[in-house]
Length: 94
Image 1 (cartoon, rainbow, N blue to C red):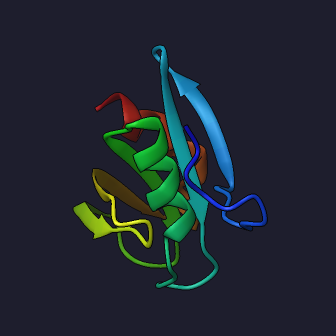
Image 2: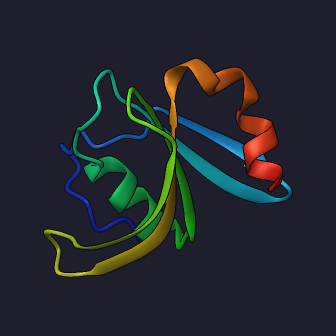
């Protein structure tokens, strides 16, 4: 059940299917930016992996956050520079 308020503006930028799983994707213009939408989506759908494109170096981190509704979310986050967007399929397969 969706715990967000009906007026919430939280939304991920893209959602794709890969091997019968859902993969949320956030795109950020700079090196940083909040991932509030990705946190909520990952918690709501019980996902263990997310993808972010930004202008930072490639990295993979474990995200652990407590949401405003008190629930906790944990997932792996792959961050890739925007110039690698056409190759992300190769990264996901690994």
